[in-house]
Amino acid sequence: MDNRPIGVFDSGLGGLTVVRELLARLPGEDLVYFGDTGRVPYGTHSPETIARYAAQDSRFLQNHGVKFIVAACGTVSTTAPQVLAELPVPAMGVLEPAADAALAATKNGRIGVLGTSATVRSGAFDTYLKSKQPVEVFSQACPLFVSLVESGWIERDNEATVAVARRYLQPLREQGVDTVILGCTHFPLLTPVLSDILGEDVTLINSGAACAARCEELLREQDALCDRDREGVCQFYVSDRPQGFSAVADMFLGRRVEQDIHRVNLEDMDRV
Ligand code: DGL
Image (cartoon, rainbow, N blue to C red; front, side, top):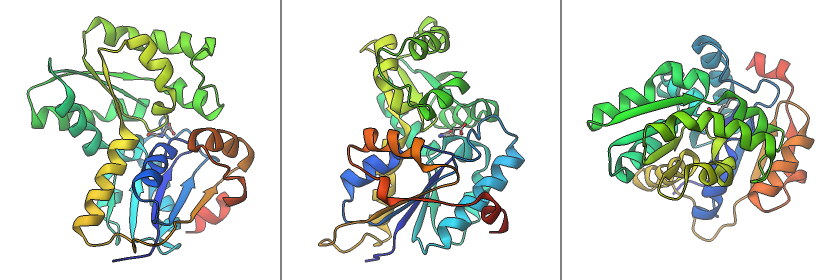
C-alpha cells in the first residue's frame, strides 16, 4: 500500500481526460496535476524540445513526492518515451494503452489515428500497432484541435470546431476506418463533435481513459494503491493564468476546482 500521490502531466487541459477517469476509478488516491499552459502546444515543437519539457514536468512532479507518473500527453508519449523510461519513479504514457484498446476494438483492421503534428511525424502509433497485428493505419495531424480545446470551444454545435473537424476527419472517412484513436489527450474533450461526424459505427478510443485504466492495473500489480478508506485530494498546477484552465476543468470534471489550482513560474521550471 502506498498513500503518496499519483503525478499526471500534460501541456495543458488534455490530461484532464486521464484525471477524470482516475477520479472515477480510484477516488481515494491523491493526484498532483501539472498542465504546462504557458508552453502549450507541445505538438508543434521538435522532439528535443518536447523531451526537455517532459523532463522538467516530470521533475516538478517528483518534487511533490509522487509514487507514479502518468504522461497524459500523446505528444510526449510518442516523441519522448526515453524520458519516461529513464525516470527514477515508475511512469507510463498513453501510446500503448490507447493502441491496445484500438486493436481490441477493430473488426475490419482499419484504424485511424488523430494526433498532434509531432505525434503523427513520430510514426509511433503506426509502428506499435503494426508490430502487434497486421492492421492498416491512417494517421491525421489535427493541430487546431488543441487550440480549440484550450479555448473551451468544445460544444457539439460550435460552428468553427465542427468545420475544422469535418476537414480533418474526411480522409479517415474515405478510408473506411472502424476505429479511431484519439491519440492526443485533448481530443476526447471533442468527443460529441467527432462522433457526430464519424457516426456511431466508428469506435472512438479515448487515450486518457485507456491510460487511466492501465495506470490502475499497474498500481495494483505493484501493490502501490492507496488505503481503501481515504478520500483523495487533487491539486492542480499550471504555468500560466489559472482562469482559462479552471473554466474548462470545472465543466469537464463536473466539480469546482478553482480553489485547488496553483500557478507555477516557468522560470522556476527552467531551474528544476
Ligand atoms: N495533450 C497533448 C497530447 O496528448 C498535447 C497537445 C499539444 O500540446 O500540442 O498530445
